[in-house]
Length: 263
Ligand SMILES: Cc1ccnc(S(N)(=O)=O)n1
Ligand SMILES: [Zn+2]
Image 1: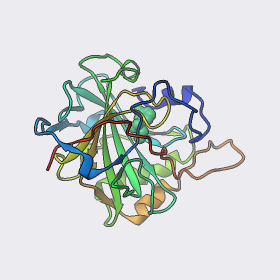
Image 2: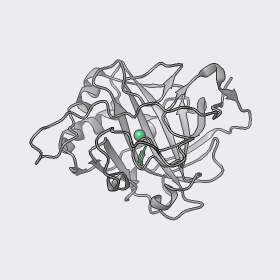
Image 3: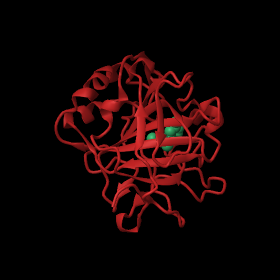
């Protein structure tokens, strides 16, 4: 699947050097979610997640994060319900993290940051036939965000952690199969916030329905340390730079409403 951020790489941006302005940027991400200003919407339905581990293909270091990519040529791993009108196909998941456990997430809850954040990226397969098409449409993408907190070791994540040294450098890829991303979801996926936003790395397009989980997952300090052992730089580059702080600065809400699925 080409849903990875090759598109992102096509718009060469210096690392985290923000483009001056995004065309008509009035729904940019990430944002701080102010809980008392979010609005309970009783019409939000339960999320329906159906992932098939057999669609898992590879892990790729794209120079922004590491992406676990799924075969999205059929409707085998899908997301629907919640705030979504259509069916969406899982194409990849990745993380954002900090240099320490104090910060690293892209979103925050009442200004509280987490050490890392998981993004499960899906595109609207009812309306479009390719990820690349959906990425420029306002109802094109749905991203589930899950906060990571440092605590007990996450057994399901360990298989992924063990594969990371093989993709230490930018543009490295390793085969990675039979991984069920549902193991990275919190027990309760029916308590979430949702708002209309954008991709947080280039092309930063305003195509994303964000679904931010209220419940976090726990990973161990050592597991996060392996994330930080990755590099932004390719094997050829003279100066190696640790892949840390790969989050975007928070953006203005600009009058958007954040809805909650719970009271
Ligand atoms: C696929 C993709 C590209 C760029 N940015 C994102 S993100 N961080 O908004 O999930 N996802
Ligand atoms: Zn992301």
